[in-house]
Image (cartoon, rainbow, N blue to C red; front, top):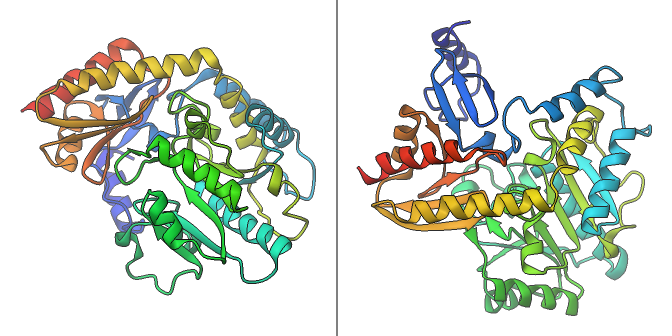
Length: 388
């Protein structure tokens, strides 16, 4: 199919849930993408933070292809070596005790909600089921995770929502106001990606961590977007010295294949028992093999490199005319400008740079192995577009 045929078929047969850019991407290498006409783009979006080692990563491809040659799927009634390898790797790197594998970040967050409620039910009995999430959060598009998302614009059309979710501002005064005897967990993103790459206040996070421990309220950290090395830490909560009870992640975990994980620490390690939860495709051996190749390479040297690249980009972006602020950590960067974010993204694409938006901000999620010349070209295009 040529470019026009692809666009026409998409508009005819695919549900109109996406406001697509007028670009048909075809192939790529590292941080370089090519469309159907051969035009090149620098990729600072990575499929919304998924292709963390870029396109056509040879290590990832070898791991995935090697597993495909063995078996492409095993249901969860049987043991799987890639699952066992990945679970062992995640637990050894984080201190988690158990992992549940799902297909996406939303499903990982569904597991976290169910785990928190069952933990509280097992220990305290019926009635202690409320979960507090933060305003401007984003936790997914299933009914439960949509309810947990603290943004009014996502709450249109789909009522009624899940009972027992409350929203607080990221302050201890607001948390204390919303907390009741029915509260079993507080769910946060250390960096709120979808609402504008907001990094939560360090003092608030430390106080919240203590408050949860003192009151046996589970602390859930949603690391779907900011996890797996994106911020220069394996998981962003580590940067603030937090001790969560449940951590969820997805996106970059399997480097381009659908995989989510709900990691359960000491309190929750025995909460889920046979029949409490399940999935057909979660923990697929091909996806897990890809994830092993990703997580095993996110070492100290790479994390320091990510921090350095992020600092380089952020410092140069700050000096661009019409930039009002720069937020984020590592290679998760939000840019506030005097120009509408959507307009900036569209003009960048015309000049060969793919970026994302997050509400009023431009968002950058480049691959970890982006080269300096590629970063410099991206900065050049950003400067041309934003300062114009």
